Length: 116
Length: 113
Image (cartoon, rainbow over all chains, first blue to last red; front, side, top):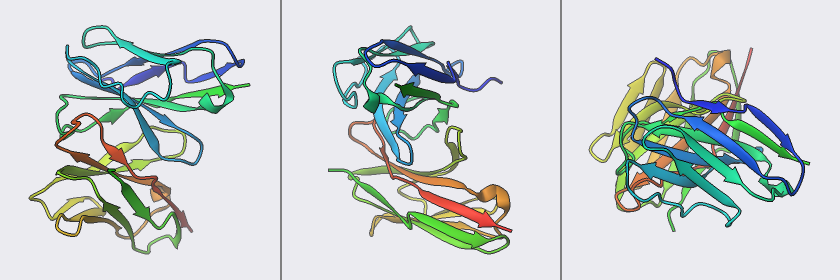
């Protein structure tokens, strides 16, 4: 079956512009995660959605970052007034369930964001 | 503060050789530990998942070990292949703050012919 897909694969934007990144999780996966990976660095947790529960937004670095999820399907990560330090690969993952993270997370290919 | 530290940061080995990557963590209470392989420009792919009661788990030429008492894990790669060149990431989850795992910075492995 189809894996996690993300779009666009690459995005170049000017400083100060808003961007929207999209994630389509695996069908039936109730949990969805967003991560940021700067060049040569590890993954940083951004936000976690589990079913209809309130999302865990504790990893969002500033109020310029927000994310939404429609039911148990598509999610969008929005970055407002982009800054150069926002340049990174944004990875989305989904899993069958949340809770203790025992369920394996399946990652998408990521969106490479470059802010000029 | 929950932390996951991996060593070495990078490693170069010859094709056919074995290697071992290390992961130390401070996440408590511990739930599970996962090793991922991330090829350049791709998302991470899960290699192994271990819970508290598991000491070792294999996936082909990859064998992960876990010592929950010392909070250490290792990933052993046997008979390395050129395609093993990648970043290997250790991820630890606790029972609290359930959705938020702690990621190590990864070990970059380069396998040379």
